[in-house]
Image 1: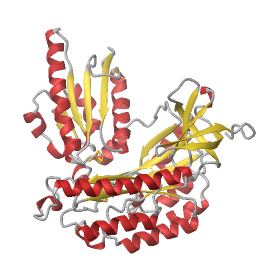
Image 2: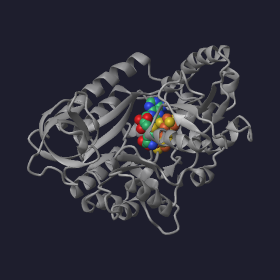
Image 3: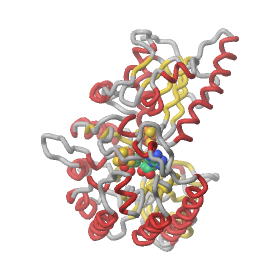
Image 4: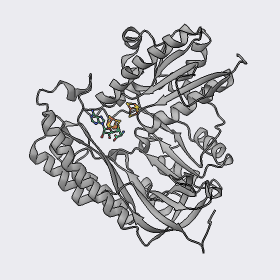
Length: 447
Ligand code: SAH
Ligand code: SF4
Ligand code: F3S
């Protein structure tokens, strides 16, 4: 172990699971003397934690590597060294090919093998680690997580066995794997001791958590146990698959106060033909039924979703079915994408690809509808008093920002001392992306 101080810069692309992994990479390297900095220029080690989900995401990596090559050369002229590691899902998908295409890269580590970085940096292991060593990964990760925010992500489930016809995740993150409950509970307890008030449980199929566990616990049971931790005020989870949304988890939404009234449940398309072609394993009627059940337990729950337009073979009528589904469900927020052809996935090989112009038109129409629903949902909060967990300073002096139970950003004028606390806010204004409010003087701080 080297005692000398070094600087590490980590750039994170993609989903929240990558955010968690980046934090864990920093934790792993800290004992080797690496301190995190916020720019690449002065770093001794630059890590790109990458995403392979859509073509654009993957392309960004190579443009970043081009810039880093110049930086590395400039540093070398000054006699300084800069090492570059590519981590994440592009690393997994492209492996050794990355070093052939971009020789500037020193190390390549996949999402289930980055725990080997310390050995690689010490020269005790080769430059490439892309096996699916998920048990080893969680064993080696820092057991005590420091926290610098009142909210934290905790990965509880890795990988995916669903093989949707458009998606790379089963190939880049490997098979579904659930972390043991006691390990998760200990990690959450440690975070709470550091002042964390809200945890978001993460997994690409988070609600499949526990599927193969011996004690029969599902995500609902895990949430019930976590809810008993003193001072943990809020629990969220993302991302769920409709096929794994069981009764216990649905009931938890009606019973557990700490479980926030927000459900991100991607549907992708409203057309049964497209859902079948996507290999989603659920119909639109099944999805609607799930939403009805959750709303019966928790009527105010905010529903969020993911949509893909222009999957191969999608007709105008199929797209219209998606619009109708959105009108029927009513989304508080959503993410929508043009279908991106991903190498190695079944969708990529189909000959009935939808033209780019049609995809763009459909995306525009869908986003207009989703944006209008989001604004309507936010407007419906005006006049309400909601508990807000403040987690950062706002955009102006004297302003702080937090989240409502429905995951809306809420801005108020207030003291920075409220950061890390939950306070009641009277909502006075709304836009599509955020709410404004005034601190409720009577019920000032609830925790
Ligand atoms: N596990 C989650 C999310 C997976 S990735 C789920 O099952 O829903 C996040 C989102 O990216 C997906 O929900 C999907 O909407 C989108 N996505 C995945 N692959 C894509 C592709 N090839 N083209 C466009 N969007 C894609
Ligand atoms: Fe991808 Fe489908 Fe798995 Fe989600 S469920 S990660 S969309 S394959
Ligand atoms: Fe991207 Fe991998 Fe997450 S492909 S969305 S970083 S699991």
